[in-house]
Structures are given as structure tokens and as C-alpha cells.
Length: 342
Ligand SMILES: Cc1cc2nc3c(=O)[nH]c(=O)nc-3n(C[C@H](O)[C@H](O)[C@H](O)COP(=O)(O)O)c2cc1C
Image (cartoon, rainbow, N blue to C red; front, side, top):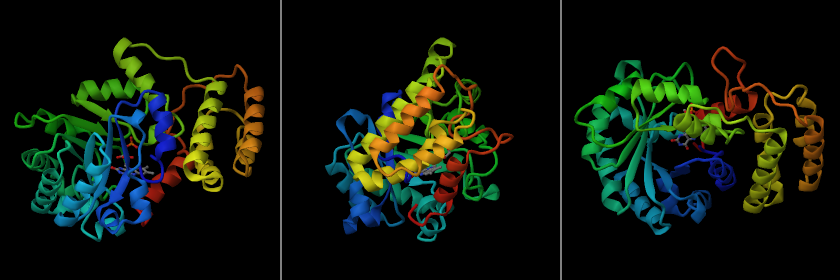
């Protein structure tokens, strides 16, 4: 996830059971121009494997060349983004715009497949809008172009992040006898129960988790444990939550330097501390502190104040449509939908 899935975030996700992770998405044009922001997104640690690097673009040559550049960093997978709904990306004929031109999509995919020896996966949506939900055709064409797996977000481009994800078409793709590649479902999975229900009902080969992992990396192990045993893991204690914040913060500072690292951590506190009564007062303090030592001090107070308190299991990254949406995650989703960079 752009502006979220950087190495510090991925570190906490890996610690808590994420099986396969992807980079933030990277512009093929940016990679070729050697833009610093794009280059930096290629970096990952060995412990993150299996790890995929995601690229987007609308030009075959640029996509082929960026696949070669990605190959030099030796990830496990190259992933193509055909799902980004943002105007600036879509207007350049990239991201979800490619859903409107299946022939172009096939050519872009072939270019990437030919440009690398690594397995290529694709992440996309159901279609451009309600009147053009063409994922069934898209899946067949992408498989023919040589991809190794397909992740489908159960919304159209027109929906952005609104409404509920519709997994029925994902199931149709999965049940198509022509489809041999693994199909991963994505959209709105935020609890072990929902993961089990959707896996059983829609028969997907894997589930991709996005927003629910923001501030709640425990979601990965909770789901895996539930799928394996039918039981629930105990929810993270306040010490474990503060511990995850510390890890995320330290990695963030190490990765981005103190000023940016501390600043960019501010968007995560609300989600990490969701469900604790009157937490706002502490949250406000955390987002005003400028040094790691001061933040550590507030975290100690938080641990002391909430010792032994276990909040009810609340939806981690974002609540069901009937609940109030987490401000921080809603903002991130809106930024993802509007932000020119993605
Ligand atoms: C802040 C944010 C950034 C995102 N960035 C990307 C991205 O770079 N590449 C991508 O394929 N999807 C991206 N997405 C979409 C998610 O991967 C996912 O498809 C979507 O959020 C639905 O899944 P969820 O309900 O589990 O969050 C982003 C979503 C959010 C909220």
C-alpha cells in the first residue's frame, strides 16, 4: 500500500505472520528515470522474503525495462498494478485504466513476463465500472500472457473504496475450469471469522489483507491460527501494542531518519490503540512529540494506565460499514484515492 507498506510497516507485519508481502507500487517511468522515490521503493530486507515488487505503467517498453531493473534487486516476484483508481495514474493510461483496454493489458503483461525471469503476478479490480465488470475475460487473458497468480480486489475502479467488496465475481474466476493459476481474493477482510467465511464461500487460493493490517498486524496470525485450529488467539495486550509501536517507530527512524520517521509514524497511533477508552488524550500527546525518548515516555504512561485492560475485539484497520470509520484509515484510503503520487 502506497505510503504505508514501507520496510518499517512490513517489518511488523512479517513479525506477526504475513506470508507474502509486496512493496508500495512503483512507477515504471520513475524507475527508468532513476527517480529517487521510485528507486528507494525497491529496497527490501532478506527476512521479508517471499517478497514482491509492484510496478505500474501504460507503456510496454517502459514496463519491460522496469521489470529488468526490478530483477536486479532480486525479489521473489514482480507484481503489476492494474487496479490503482487514482486520476493521475488512470489519466496516463496506467493502473485501473488498463481494465478498459484488455488488448493493451495483455501486451503490457507480456512485456513484463518477457522482461524478467521472475514469476509475474497481477493485482486488479473487477472492472472499470458496473457496466464493464470484465474480470472473467481479463483473468483468462492474463493467464495466457503468462502470469503466475492473480489478486482481485472486489470493487470496480468507479467504486474507489466505497461500498462493500463483491466477491461473487472473484469466485466465478476461481471456478472457471480454464483458470489454473492461484486466485487471491481481496477486499474488506478484517477478522478471522470473515476470512474463514469468505475462503469457504468463494474458494479462493489466498486472501490479501490491506487496511485491516494498518495498526493491527496481529490480524495475520489471528487469521492463520483460526483457519488452522478454529480457535481465537488472545487479543494483543497493551504491552504488546506498545511494543509493536516501538518496533515500528524505531524501524521508521532507522529507515527515514528521525524527523521524517517520527512524523510519518503519527498516522499509525490511532489504529494501534483503537478500542482503549479515553485514549485520545495519549494519542494527542504522541502526535505532538518530536523525539523518540518523549514518545517512549508517553508509551510508558499508556502501558501503566491500561495495564490488564483488554478492549473488545474491534475491527482493526477499518470498521464494518455500520461502525464509525477510523479517521486515520479513512484518511489514508482517501489519500490513496486522491493522492497524485499513487
Ligand atoms: C493507503 C492505501 C494505499 C494503497 N496502495 C496500494 C498500492 O500501492 N498497490 C495496490 O495494489 N493496492 C493498493 N491499495 C489497495 C489495497 O491493496 C487493497 O486492494 C484495498 O485496500 C482493498 O483491500 P482491504 O479491504 O483489505 O484494504 C492501497 C490501499 C490503501 C488504503
